[in-house]
Amino acid sequence: MGALLGGGGGMGNLGLNDQAAADAAAAEQRNRMHPAMRGRNARGMRNTVGGRGSTPVRKFAFGRPGESWGRPPSYVGGGLGMEIKNSTDVAKLIPWPYSTMLDSNDSRYEYNPYQKARWHSFIRSDSYLVQCAEYDQVASSGDVNALALFVADNPYHAEASLQLSSVLFHTNNRESAMELLRRVLWIYEYAAPASFLPGGGRETTTATSTQPILMDQSKEENGGYFSALFRLVRSSCMVGCVSTSLAVARYILSLDPLRDPMGVLLTTDYFALCSMKDEHARFVVDLVDSGTIRLHHKEGEVHYDGELTDMPNWAFAYALALYRLKGSDADNNEGDDRSDAVPTYSNRADEALCAALTKFPPVLELLLEKNEVDVTGRSFQRDWPTVLSHFRMLTEAASKARPSGSEPSDADSLHHRAMATAAGAHAIKIFVQRSHKLWSGDDVLQWLYNGCASVAAAAAAETNDEGSSSALKPFTFHPALIRYMSVDPSDYEDAFTTLPADANPLDPALVAPALALDPNRRRLGRRMPRGGGGGDIGNDWQQQILEQMQLAGAGGEMLMIDPDLPLAEVFWRSLMPWNHVEGVPEGPPPPNP
Figure (cartoon, rainbow, N blue to C red):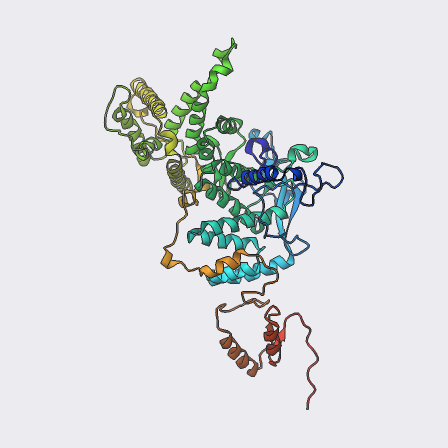
């Protein structure tokens, strides 16, 4: 399953905007300029595996980290860590539907690949939790400048850096946003063991080679990792690195294949087919044929379970992938006397296309409209007005359809059906927006027209045989699609929505300090009180002193002084009777006169 989805071993280096390729090119250039240093490390010692003076070479899953990033703190040192548990050890904590599959007697789950899954989760140290509490106060203030100051003071806080990266993307500062995103992924990568990361060597570890590596995105500690990966998928596609987007999307899917929390199934087929490589087309075909991925959704006590081709994009992508592989039919069938008994890619592609057109008739006209195909004219090869009339009637019949006598017609079922229709419309919109260019070639359009003509002819023959009552069978979306009801189609567009330059709330002077890591620099932001209730972050210090004096006069408690302030300021503030330096034990009270 890991090799099929691309998670763990078998993926190699994901590459971050071809960062690995750039590193390899730079290394080759150094070797040419300095042949005497070839095969030696930075200390001038030979890099022989297991030899004297050898140094371990670490593989970076998301690209080489920046030289100034340093090393994130470990869990013991106040950073992030990771815990790993087997399914048998945490049976009560396994999320649905994995928990259902463990105890189910359903024949569909007779082979359960997740029986021996290993569940991973990031864990936060006590120091990291303190930073999280401070970050929550900054986030609640809604001040992006305070967020930039917080990131400058806490460069290894992943969630804050990820949020600032999002702000930079939406203010059209992509270079700085990508640097922060890479740093966030480096923080998570450093906290995780090599076996959890893509290309981490699972194929060489016998003990874990058959154990899927899973992660629950619904946990607060893991949500930032999934969000960072999804943002990497989107940003890589924007700059044309669709292979990187495909690799990361497959990795995300491998971490939670039955729930798809980030909705990567809505675009993974596009990344695979957009690369124009036969191996990626075979990935689409193999993933659908294997049945590894199924659609699961639960509404109340009702569990919906669907196939991958119940999604509009995968139904059409499966047909297009088979169509692209039809050129290998001659190679596969050469010298095989039994080739007639095995369906060729060409025959399978035609059947898959007809099935997709029958299951999702609204997609046809939307694809043609997006590709600006003339559907009003007629030619010897294509007569679009004739075939489109059938699909328009199907779409209209579906909008007016009512549950039949054999279908449940209670309020909940009708509500679920309406939600499935809305979710299906979401999926179709994203599919047409993303993949319409894949269907714009003249040969593909001709093949699409032939499939439409076959579906229309079959419907006409059925009408003549059984009468008009069964001529139009309204289509319905599978209720399992409801899980994509909450997705935002703008998250799958080719560009981030940016704010006008005059409406940019972020001070440009704060971007550079947020990106730079200087351990000797004084804190830029004011430290939040440990007890919470930080108040207004941007208050003037003179106003704060006045409030402290009033509070002291009213018999209030002592106020803490940030020890990271300049030494002179700490000294004169400590002279005030209402102040106390944080971390310094209080002395005995002064004697009474």
